[in-house]
Length: 219
Image 1 (cartoon, helix red, strand yellow):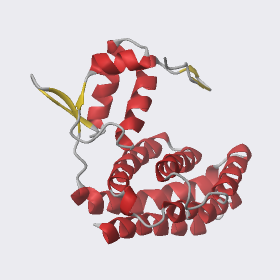
Image 2: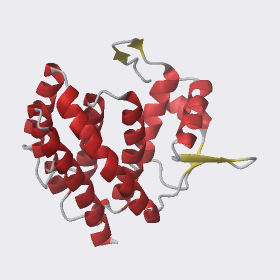
Image 3: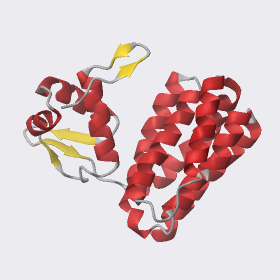
């Protein structure tokens, strides 16, 4: 059963818990592209009712992670590699913006969290499980988005990062070094923590660009 998660505003609803749980399974391809989604089975697996699962699936459809067909049901969307250029174009604009904002707006506590995260990444190596590394990659990006202090920007970037991560997971076993991709965050996190907005923006742009190059190199 899903445990209640707490935020500064109190308990997160079951629908939100279901949304986050299913979103990450779809992103990491634990639910395979094109796979049929049974809301009753998912509800039983998570120990909750069907209603919050159905609410979560509606949100996931707006995120382009699932698609529903009348009389056929709901399915995980296909990962379209041809979307890579469009997704990267948007991220190359928005990721540097978030990094620059975070460098200017992050609280002392968040800056300390950024430094701690950079230190943790420095201990990772190529022998670590690539899927675990990709989950950590999502965590790092979401930390930066939150540090930027703009909820609308955060929401948009999470959606595009989700789509980018699905593309990455499609070719994960072909990519030479996931750890190398993750290690690019070290300097970025340090620049944000130090308040160096220009450097943070440049490093964020370079990181997104290298992501696209890595994907194209194995297609």
